Image 1 (cartoon, rainbow, N blue to C red):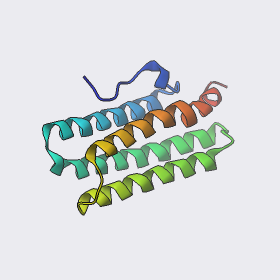
Image 2: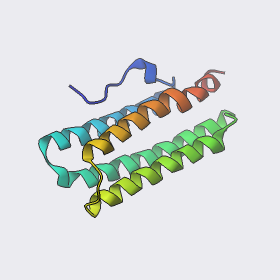
Image 3: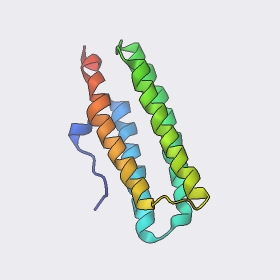
Image 4: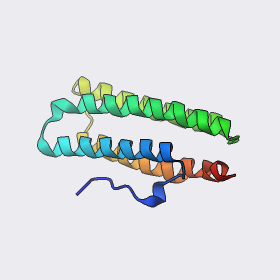
Amino acid sequence: MAFLSWHERFSVGHAEIDQQHQRLFELVNHFDDVIQMGMVEELPRIVDDVMHLSEAHFRFEEGLIQDIGFPVVAEHRKIHRELLDQVGHMRSSMMVGGHVSHKAVVRFLADWLTNHILREDMEYKPYLTS
């Protein structure tokens, strides 16, 4: 069973955004699978994949919400940057053998992703349909 499951409640109603979110879900699940298999040497690469996909997703999403007239684009952009900084710090800590639990990283990613979609991203959903 997947660590993180996609449900329609996560849909913002935009096919490309929803597909990107689903891909992020898949990467978080892959991270958890790799932990379960004990292949921890692969985890930094997966975190890199999460960061690269997130950066591309954030650029796309920020452009879209700017175009649809979402009034708090700057705040949304700031939240995105903070996430990338946090994940970057976790990755750096993982690389130097710092005190970061792999399970804590996967839980952070899952919690952040689901909460961000359900809170911040759902705020722009009405702008997509207007």
